[in-house]
Length: 158
Image (cartoon, rainbow, N blue to C red; front, top):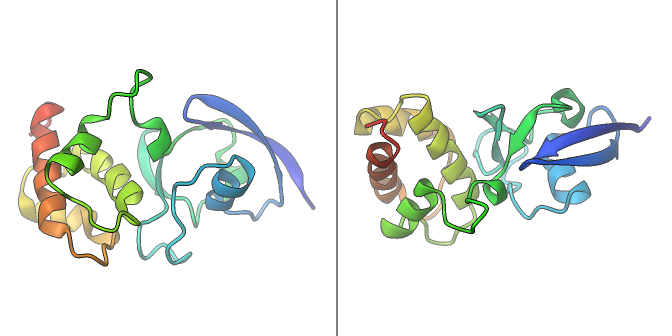
């Protein structure tokens, strides 16, 4: 039975009517109309659906939409500044050519921001470990690590 609830996504409240077992991923894509996060596996094994919930990294394919009512949800669409300026991590991905096909890029960037904010960007090994849940079929991993290292210094975390 569908229920109504409100999701706070990228600073805006969105009314959603969905079954209690609907994953956040589908609410974001189908009900709110965001193109990202991406559906990769639906099993929390690829990271393409990574978002932030109250500033912490979360996999939206396994998070129930109704369970995050009233919490702050940020997707890649909400990461850039209101003036359109890219977030430092987005810019670092561009600077370091840290993407190829781009399918995994939104989830990679969201996880990378959390990696820095949570203090896991102190070494290449720590970055690789933290980011191990985000898969890239194009194997841009060395460039992703470089982007995270660049941003960790820019964000004052390195």
